[in-house]
Length: 143
Image 1 (cartoon, rainbow, N blue to C red):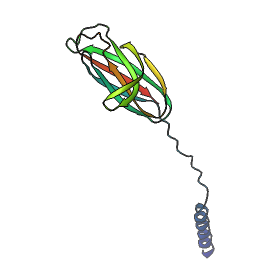
Image 2: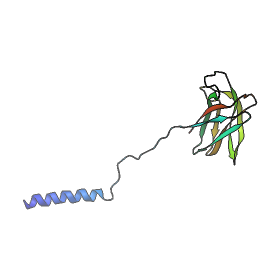
Image 3: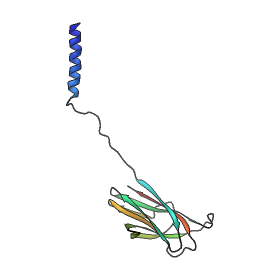
Image 4: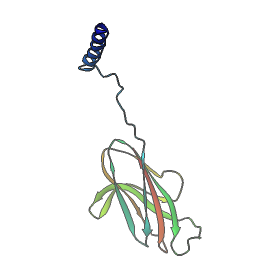
């Protein structure tokens, strides 16, 4: 019986000692993150503009899409509205434009830029053809 207890004690001590200072065989946890999607919505008045600032933490593509435009007075009205869509850097109360184009609402990204880590802004503005205020939605996807 004493021999069995001694053997059991030896096994327990060996297991305890092997746990101290041994190598960790667990796999490291890796976190993969996909693109981040941001939605910028608002109302644009005749002659007006609006912008939305966002931060990019890793280099990658930013896709900016004018997703929807609808008249505020007659929401059921269906006509193509062309607005200015831009990407740039925020400067206090505005957005300095580095890339812009006229865009109508669509299902594809109208602006695609490779961005370094930093703070950027998407800007939407009247290019001179609005007759009434409109509601807009801009989708920004970046890594």
